[in-house]
Length: 315
Ligand SMILES: [Zn+2]
Picture 1 (cartoon, rainbow, N blue to C red):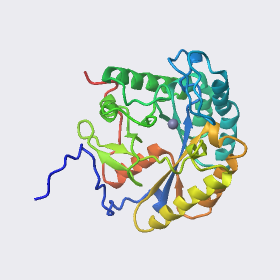
Picture 2 (cartoon, rainbow, N blue to C red):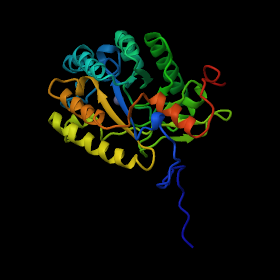
Picture 3 (tube, rainbow, N blue to C red):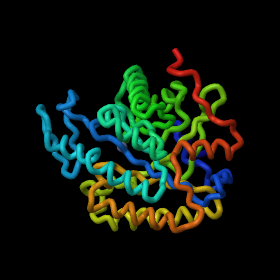
């Protein structure tokens, strides 16, 4: 007899190569989701009243106890110069994206939400500050979720229906999002090329849309491997070509992670442009917001249309 091994609630099987044959709108072969992270001003900063400074950028160097004006300035590049450049490119190509925004970032730069909504992009929630939730207690995390939703609603005119925590969530995060009632989906997973369902409240399934750290401009960070715009384009095109080919047999989705201060640099934006030109050159590519993917997945499985549940948290 093999020894039983506790699985910790993890799911190693997924669809086991036989996913439900959900058809994307228009019979598309691939759902392509661009995720534009808006984190500037939400990075930890003593200048913003936080307990420590952010230490991750082009160089990894923590300034302790006092404001880090160098780091603050680097992040400001994202909203000042990166966003207008990214916005113009998406507009030129007529591509819809999901802005994955920290509440504090949009509270500081609300015009980004207004411009994104005007351009037809989705605004999804990335937490209040740009930080992990892994060590938050439940009450704190509940407050953080509510505060993030309120800030995004104030800036964007509508609450977010999607959520993605920076890196490690707590063990409560997904349950709290489901209990909140306002979330159609979360992206706190990296374990598939397809959406999947988890059990929600009162019969409403909750959609998980896995995100990706490889097809992501974060690889331009120190040691990440991307130097030139060509590196980003080549890697994303390789992933796209494979998923697109597989999409002829079964549904596939691709997530591309972008950051205002990273891909928005003049030496890098061409990589996104080249990748998007490649994708747009293939028939049957659905450039889509993540809320649309989640709704299409539900519809494809025969579930009723999603509606927000009673607002706020259950006692
Ligand atoms: Zn992020």
